[in-house]
Image (cartoon, rainbow, N blue to C red; front, side, top):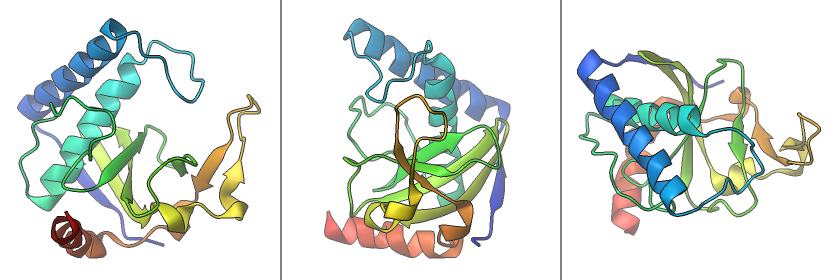
Length: 166
């Protein structure tokens, strides 16, 4: 199992990440975008939580994060994709169209305390044994257990490789 690392965001960081999340949600609403995977909520908490998780990953890597790239398919942080969930016990969720070569980082918790759990390449997480529909709402995906994630110590090397590939 990967070694976890808890990142504590400062109040100014939380303000910045929170505002980026709100701007993302408003941009999606303005464009008439709907959730691709059938979630039926207002989306604000997901966008704010996701933005704060990205900020936590950037802080862990010692990099500045603007949070305002403006394009859904862009990398979240330095070639990485960040997946966030509030419950610490949850798994990393991958969808069939997620990039096979992209590294995905799982972040859990609620700001200001966010925990980086580990990471995995898309192709490594898209295993038949991880395919599930745990909510029973016809929204199956790959649910990668935390025990299958790579250690965070390898993440810095992966970020360097992402920049070399670009």
